[in-house]
Length: 277
Ligand SMILES: Nc1ncnc2c1ncn2[C@@H]1O[C@H](COP(=O)(O)OP(=O)(O)OP(=O)(O)O)[C@@H](O)[C@H]1O
Image (cartoon, rainbow, N blue to C red):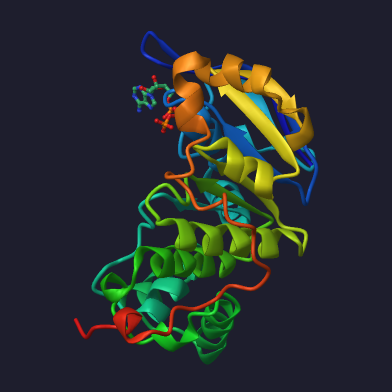
């Protein structure tokens, strides 16, 4: 269980997150929605400790993660893997090495420097890539992959950490509709194995299609916490304002007006064939 208790984060005078209290049971798939600047990223970053809380605390299974330091903090950061809108891969490294870098945080620094990975690590990385249906790209430079493929590599890298939860900060905001759908399907597939997924999303339709619980933020506060069915147009208006409502429902921004598909489908047409760097 992840417990967020009266958490506030200030940046100077700016109140980015304001007295947020939430309990997220292990294995939930949670979407956080809200306008730009609502505090969604800051909330995720405080869970992972990329940002510290200004007050309040965050606890996981009875351990106050917001107070961890040193080795215990690094171990927690392995437990809650983060993926980002811009993938954050090393462009001129091959895909499999990018994935194995997910293990960095618990390895001998000398081996890291020399980029020496054990056969077990290589096997695990290939397994993760296979699971995301992109094992055939393993020897290519990351920068030669499409955005959707790069995000799947980032998810495979996150899986190398054997995480208890995945925190995804706008994971589909840079993707075309079809790739957005493949990435969301991958996250749902991972969640079905008991890994908590907490994802910031720009659009309501994506949150509705994929998340069992939706948390709506506005000006740093949680203003909605419920199921997709409970998220009525009135609630959406409160979250996005009358002006923002159209954008929030925009099908052009994500693919999820399409019916979710079960298994990821890999592009195999010549136009999607990989280019040598
Ligand atoms: N490092 C920082 N320094 C100063 N202000 C910050 C910092 N990070 C976030 N903020 C401010 O905190 C508020 C919340 O930002 P945050 O990025 O959490 O919102 P968001 O809902 O994720 O928005 P977006 O969808 O645009 O990423 C914003 O006003 C933002 O400008």
